[in-house]
Image 1 (tube, rainbow, N blue to C red):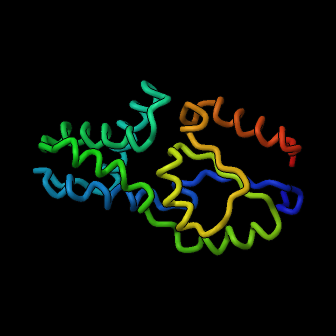
Image 2: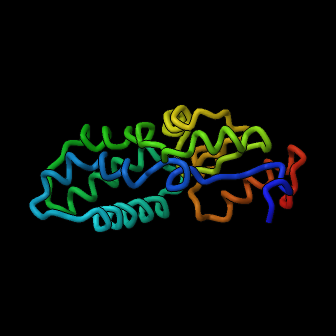
Length: 174
């Protein structure tokens, strides 16, 4: 498979272009520092992923920035840490500050010279805006869970993107 064969390149954002693991760990530091039991990075990320995916499945139209405070609260309950709702909401606002991988902006800049770039992300528009600035490229298409009304891995999200690109004249093979 050669990239030259494609007109549009589509990306996931968090975990691919943005270092969401570091962002989550840093965003949860206030909580994890107060937990009576020390937890490793993998354990923290697994607990976060469990609560995040559960909430996404139960409330697929909830905005990501509104979903993360619930994740924070559930982690606090699981780890027996008392938190305020303001603290939970503050965690929900961290996504735009999560760091980009060191090579993401440069790689996207190069790819943009040769292809249209599209992203499909589970975040909302406000959260993605901060990440977009870190990536320093103008994406041709941005498809967020907020716009679609559900979260990946729901097939609906991928179908939405494929249909939208199709309306712009780009077939699946392109």
